[in-house]
Each structure stands twice: as C-alpha cells, then as structure tokens.
Length: 192
Ligand SMILES: [Zn+2]
Image 1 (cartoon, rainbow, N blue to C red):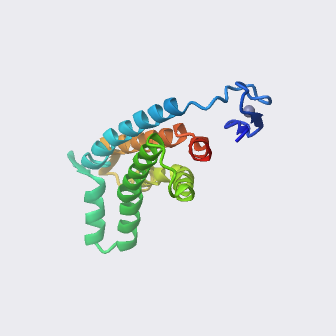
Image 2 (cartoon, rainbow, N blue to C red):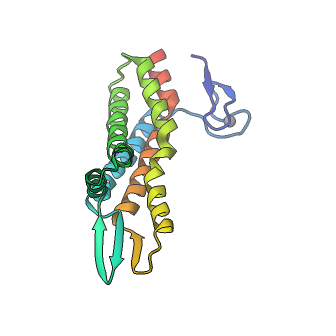
Image 3 (cartoon, rainbow, N blue to C red):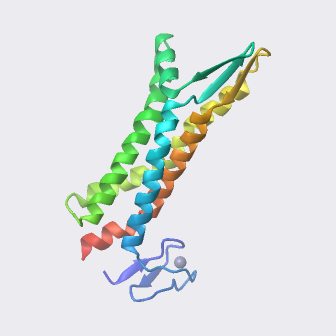
C-alpha cells in the first residue's frame, strides 16, 4: 500500500511523507504507540467499571435517610416492579454493552499485537461497531440526569452517586481506547 490516509482531514498522502500535505499534521503510523495508548486507556476503563457497578448511581435522600441504588440494584428493582422493557434497556446499555466493548477492544489489541489477520473483515466491522456506539453509551448518565430533573418531590432529593461519575469515566476511557486504536493499523498489518 503506497498511500496513507490522514486520520484528521482524510487527505491521501504518500506513505513516505511525515506530514499531511493538506492539514500539516503528523501522519506517521505508530503501531506500537497506538497499541500501548489503547491498552492503557482500556485498563483505566476496566478500573472504573468496578466502582461504576458497585457504588450507587443514584442517591436519594428522604427525611434525612440516604439511600443508594446501584445499576444492578435498579435493574432488579425495576424488573420486580414489572418495568421489563426499561430494566432490559438499562441492563443492556449499562452492564452488557460496556463489558462487551471492553472484551472486544482487548481482543482487537491482542490480535494486532500478535499480527493475526484471520477474519480481517470481521475485525474492521467490530471496530466500527465500537466507534458508532461509543457516544450512545452515555445514555445511562442521561437517564440519571433526567431522573434528577424529573423527580422533584419536596421531601426527596436525588443526586448522582459515585457510580454515575465512575460510569461516565469508564465510558470516556473506552472511547479514548477505541480512538487510540488507529483504524489504519489493521489495514497496515494485514496488507503487508
Ligand atoms: Zn490531514
């Protein structure tokens, strides 16, 4: 492959060029650097995944009683109350999808590191799926914000708990990890 696409402006440049001819940015493909960055961000995401699920995502204060609700706790409660669709959406969006993304990113980093080109098309597809669904992972934080805005009983105060900030950070680091994993690397390794 003689050409290299600029990841910032999309211009096609000669492989030998160090700087993009259109926007002037550094376009050298740093495979090792990208892998290290992606792995570091991914480990940070894993670290935040734990408090995101163990600590309350919501805290309600009613008559000076502080009660916290974790994601799983909320899902179980909603399920018990018969809110099956909402319980299912929250479970898929905040427990299942983030976990799957982390697993897929580990898998992609591992296969690039081992230079395995089998099922190349599938890997590109997985990568794009992660990229496309990235911003949607924050749907949970939106739910918390909505709840806080909607529920305004005078005797009940609802504030986002540690779980909510951990969740937001986990989503943020997963995004950084997928962006650090330069899409061009897969092509580069497999087309040589
Ligand atoms: Zn450019």
